[in-house]
Length: 115
Length: 113
Image (cartoon, rainbow over all chains, first blue to last red; front, side, top):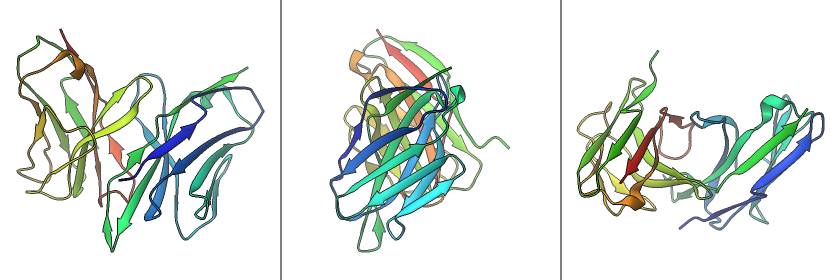
């Protein structure tokens, strides 16, 4: 089955700097890669996702890149702000012959943005 | 719009007792999931349902059971709770299985003593 590794587990940056979180996946059949943000005491919420037919996707200060050959994808946050402080989860979902599998999550990255 | 709701919000349960965590969604989503969240381990899938009437095992199904009698409800039952089941439990739903946005409930914090 799919296995998702996420690094780093914790990340501290100064406000205004960029933050990068990296994930690798094991199953070459994976074709959907979402990122979720979880603020302290709250539920995870989708912030951006990418599908395997796209190499990069941007949404304002957030971007995700995907390298299918190397089986890794990354989240990039530019001009970080204190409200970006949260735990971020990557996930991957495989597709086997048209049958989509479940989302498998990485262990999360706790991002702290210092004012 | 309620979205997806869980009950109870928190619970302390004696080991050996049974309990059902409730989850209801009003988005008419086909797929529903139960995850547990433990510090340093991320979100691990317990059970899932592709559509009403069908269920499947996730990564950590032992000690848990689910049912999906209709589209809206997806209860999770612990038949005989053990301390290792102390965790935060999240129910989620999505239109399709695994390839569209998953919406999470607010979570249930369960402590087994």
